[in-house]
Amino acid sequence: MAALNQPELSILITAYREAETIGKALEAILPQVGDLTAEVLVICPDEETASVAGRYPGVTVLHDPGQGKPTALNLGLRQARGSIIVMTDGDVYIGDNAIAALLAPFDDPSTGAVSGRPVSLSPRTTMLGYWSHLLTDAGAHAERLKRDAAGQFFVCSGYLYAIRAGLVGTIPEEALAEDAVISHLIGGQGYRIRYAPKAEVFVKYPTTYRDWLAQKVRSAGGYAQPIIVRSPLRMRSFWHEVSGGTWRALRYPRNIREMLWTWALLLARLHLWLLIFWQVRVRRLPLSRLWKRVESTK
Image (cartoon, rainbow, N blue to C red; front, top):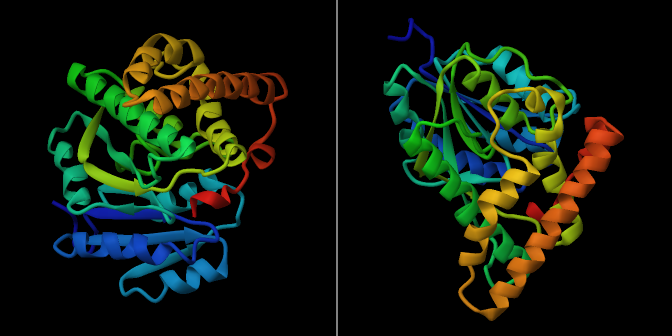
């Protein structure tokens, strides 16, 4: 049982220049924590986002120095007092009952983290919108379902996940994929990562190829960094993607147009992994060079 005045749950929402979306994110979360002893922390560097978030009762705003998401999360982890910590972003919003679904697997003491399920808000009728549906449905969702059922390690979605407090201290500030780093740190301690497919989080994905590449270099590129490359808990790589994901991708299209878009995606993923090899493995560019704000997802 939580100590007196200690929240059962801490919710960390990282945001940057998201004054237009942070309100919707909070309005989806706050009704779901009404029956819990919870704290909601919005971590942002800009006054516009802070001003909007500060209008909501019960929300605490933490001002981070604007040095990237790992730094913001480290600030939130230091301040969080709950026994379970939920992490999400200020430019997405969660579905009904997502918090309850996310918390349920923690009844098992072997559970160290639980991933929610990203759902694409982008139209399937455009090429990049179709890519987002394929990658979230036939890719991440199918892979997490399979690995969860088998009791295997997998990486939580950074859009919505929860961890047991005390398992993660500090995230390396140069981490490109902080969700992958956190998942590996927890899995490396022998805890299970679980999947809660009913904990939905709704996400708008990039609408231009430039933005798509910028976003994917951040997320997939993190798997080429030493902290994950050296981990015995492997999930994602170019070769794993080719061997495990190609057949699922080719079964996903419903018509000839979507089949052509699927082949275009396979070429785009090859471009992405070559870019990651050059920028992350060879040049070892820092987070400040690789992180680019993706405007079309806002």
